Length: 204
Image 1 (tube, rainbow, N blue to C red):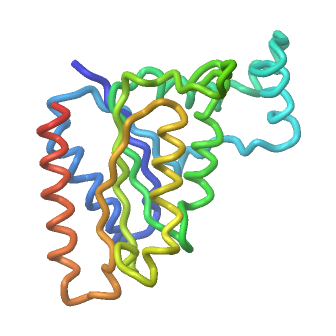
Image 2 (cartoon, one colour):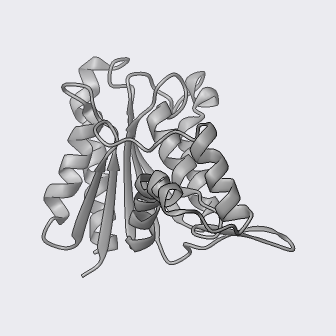
């Protein structure tokens, strides 16, 4: 059975993003082994002074860490291992202020890990996760699929770039305009649910 990692940031009560990720889970819970990382409850450690320098020393400098230093890195290393163990990755996130929430960016800052998910070559960086596939499930109150907001949707392109940097083929399923078109919100969500079903049938 294939392994699926669901990474979700859906802390808002009544979250529309949660509706989509719950739909994915209900469809596929018997088809794949699912691991869930709820970023609202278990966020990565930010790359602040101590752990950033430990990461650079180990991953770029090739220096072995002490036992205490390894313990300091354990939480983020476990998060990296989750993506290494996965065949499929589902990232569920709203679009906040034109991009992904800071906690989701912190997850990417953790899993884009030198020597683990990418490596440096003579011709530049190369992703090490080419056997994996990912999908972004994203919702927003505004219609970021149409101008003028389409031009300032930095969220889904950033996600695609981050996955691609690791060698992961990704696609996105969006439900945008849920507040802008309140009379069509149910229709927009249902369309996204149908796309989730199509993706599920393709993956499993």
